[in-house]
Amino acid sequence: MGIAERKIRQKEEFRASILEAAWLQVLADGWQSLSIRKIADAIEYSIPVIYNHFENKEAILLEFTKEGFQKLADTLQAVKDQHTEPAVQLEAIAYAYWDFAFEHKEYYQLMFGLGIPACDRVNQIAEMKNMTGIMISTIKETILVSANKDADHFLKYHTYLSVLHGLVSIQMIRKDGPPTEENRRVLQDAVSGFIKSILV
Amino acid sequence: MGIAERKIRQKEEFRASILEAAWLQVLADGWQSLSIRKIADAIEYSIPVIYNHFENKEAILLEFTKEGFQKLADTLQAVKDQHTEPAVQLEAIAYAYWDFAFEHKEYYQLMFGLGIPACDRVNQIAEMKNMTGIMISTIKETILVSANKDADHFLKYHTYLSVLHGLVSIQMIRKDGPPTEENRRVLQDAVSGFIKSILV
DNA sequence: TACTTTTGTTAACACTGTTAACTAAAATGT
DNA sequence: ACATTTTAGTTAACAGTGTTAACAAAAGTA
Image (cartoon, rainbow over all chains, first blue to last red):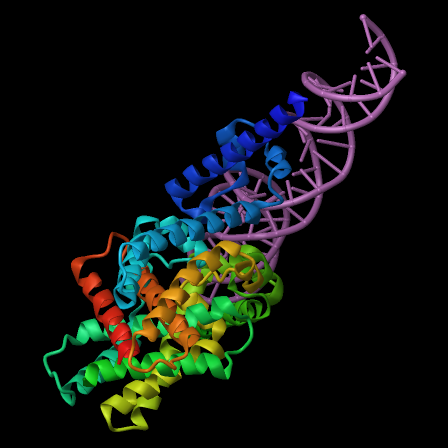
């Protein structure tokens, strides 16, 4: 009964070729512009065959999301294993996480559902400067009353905004409803830690 | 020559009605499913009239993005004005930012290009647990060698991941190319601050 | 009233995801 | 080896999407 095995193997190969073609598309033009038709075109088959292997387009993207998380987990584990002291591991993991995100940008954006408003678009929203202006000035003023008055206010502002945005978006990804009391404690923890790090 | 003025006024009203119809759509089904046709349908005009007032769909979304940033700026300014001490202002702004994000979820998602992988989708990615597992265990171990051993490891993990994700996504929004040395300093600043907050 | 400009419409183009209906090939049972 | 069933792959369509060219109707101007 080698026929059945060959069929399974062929099906597996077919599935892999779909994923490969899809990934080339993602690398070329980003996952936003991935289309079933382009995949079908690349593998030189008609469109509906793809639906024999994946329920829908979402399932293909989900596959990459899984792949991405697995790759990231492997990377972090490897980095962790290079150190013994927990605090050092924590630091190394953080840097590895950062590096992974930019080395595998497409994976990362897919994993966390980042639409990414084009950089020129963002920079041309004058209204954004109204917000950042308030934050930066407050950071500056805080540094002025702090212990180390020569802290880099732009660096601190960037950290501040990043922390806030990270908290919000992770929270939004995690649950659909309104944030709980526990979520707010995470916010308090992060914010108080950040402010303390300025005031020293 | 009141005619020209009336025309301008009518044009402005028309524009506003487009935005209103669009916003109702966004509120109802999220900005992902906003369509020109639905807007045209809502205002009971044909499709191309919309293109007399907005260059394309992107321009409509950009309008809301601007609105969102302005609303947020106003909110933050108002909150800031309620306090005098900079550190307190910084804290209040952070909470106001958080509240704004969830009170105006649609604005926030638009402003920062959040695609938001559906919460059930995310929770069913087993591979994600491989990653979070590594982080959580390392956090636990770090707490064990820290000064206050009764810290909430889940809270700290949540903070840790949020900080990292925030740093990455703000960086990705800001620039298209690879991160610079300065970006890495922001990362270092945030990470070292976080680890210090665990070790006390 | 005749002419010009503005306003809005219809119809189409070029895409997208998805699926029903059908054909050709391969595997199976007799 | 032949008939039958199962599988693989096709074409063609449906229901959407953003966008635009060509045209008709209304409004303003001379």
